[in-house]
Length: 277
Length: 308
Image 1 (cartoon, each protein chain N blue to C red):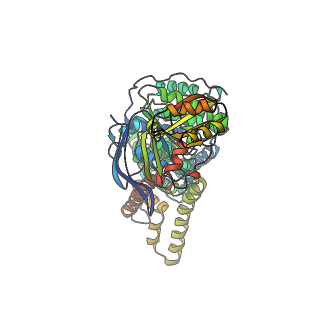
Image 2 (image 1 turned 45 degrees about the horizontal axis):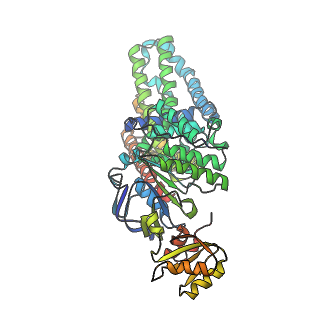
C-alpha cells in the first residue's frame, strides 16, 4: 500500500460546545443499540411490547374500553401489578446496558474517549443517557400508546387518558433511570460485557427470588424492600393509585439511594480506568 | 512558549513509582521520549493529557495546567495510544469522524477531516470497511488518523511503530516525518526503538525507571565529546592507525572509521600520518554518538532496548 502524504493542516476550526460532544456519544450509543443487526435487543423489546399488548387486551383492559365513567387511573396499573413485566424487562436491561462501559474497556476505546476534550462525567452521562433512552422507549411508549388507544376506542376521558399517560411516563422514566444506573454500575465493574449482562440479570432476579423466599418464610413484607423490582412495583402501583404491598415512599427512597450509589461507583470506576488499564 | 514544562512531576501507583520528580522544559518541535519498557514514558504521556492525576508536582502543556485545564488542553492535543483501542464494529471513516466530533468538530467538518486524514495515512477504499477487518498496519494508521483528525497543535504518539513489519514501520515513519515538518505542529514520540527517532526528532528526553536521565536538543546531546574526532580514510586503515601511533596519536579504529583524541599540536600530524600510510583523508570532523550509543552510556543495563 503506497502512501500519499499531502500537507493537511487547515488552520483553526471553530469547536462545538462540550454538551454537544455528550450528545454525540448519546447518539452513537443509541444508534448502536437500535441498529438493525442488534437482533437480541429487538427480540427482547418486541417481547416486552407484546406482553404489554397482551396485558392490555386482557379482561382488565377490555373493562377500561367498555366501562365508561367508572374507569379510574388504577385500571391502567396492570403492568405494575405483578413482577412478571419487570422481570422480563431485566433481560432487556442486561442486553442494552451490559456493554455501556465494559465494551469500551474491553476494546480499550475508553482511552480514546477520555483523551478527547470531555470529562469522565461527560462520558458517563453520554453512555448512561444512551442506555436510558433505549430503556425509556420500551418502558414508556407501549403504556402511552395504550392510553391513546383507550381514549380513541374506549369510553375514557381525555383527562384520565392524559393522567394515565403522565403516570406511565413518570414511572417509566424512574424505572429507566434506576435500571440504567444499575447497568452502568455493573458494566463498570468488569471488562467483559457478557459478565456485566449476566450480573445485571443475576442480581435483579436473585434479589427478587431472595425477597420472595424470605417473605414466604417470615410472612413479613419487609424483605421485599431488598428487591429493586419490588421497590419499583410499589412506586408504580402507588403512582397509579393502587395500594402497594410495601410503603411506596420508603421504596422510592431506596431506589433513589441505590441509583445515586450506583452512579457514584460507576463514575469512580471510569476515573480509575486509565490507571487500571 | 515552551511546549511542555514540568516541575517535580511524580506519579505513584501504590508502591510502584511510575514517574519520579520529573523536572523538564521541552521546546516546540518534534520530541523523542525514549527509554526501555517500564521507563515511565506512557505514564508521562497520560499525565500530559490530564488522564492521570499527578501524585505530586505540576505540569503545563501548551501553557495549560494539566490538572486544572484538562478539557481545554485536550482540544489542542491528539493522542495515539500504544495499545489497540479502536471500536471494531465501526468503519474507519465512521470511527475517525466520531473521534473528530468528540473533539468538538461540527459534523460536516469532522467527516471532511476524517476523509483527509485517512487519505493522508494511506487508507482509501478500506476506510469504508469495518475496523474488525483491518490488519495491524491499517489499525495503526487509523490510530494515527484519529489522533490528528482535529488538527491538534501537539500530537502524542505512544510507540507508533509497535507491531509493524519493516515496510509498515518505514511507511509510518515517513508519515511522522511529514507531520514533524508541518509548521506550528509539535510531536512527542515515545518509543523504545531508538533508530525510529534518529533523524526525526529535534529534542531528546531519556527516561529510565521513572527518572529523567537527559533532556536536550538532539544535535547537542549526540555531539558527544568535543575533544574526540572522527576520521574516514581511503586506503589501508590498519596502516593508517599504525602511522598515527608513530606520531603519538592514540586511535580507536571502527569498521570504516577511526576515532582519535584531538591532537594537542593541531591536526597537521593526521595528514602527515596519512601521507606516511599512503591514505587519503576523506572526512575529518567532531565525533557524534548515535542515540543507541548515548542510551547505552546513560542507562545501566541499556541493552534492554529492543533492536528495530
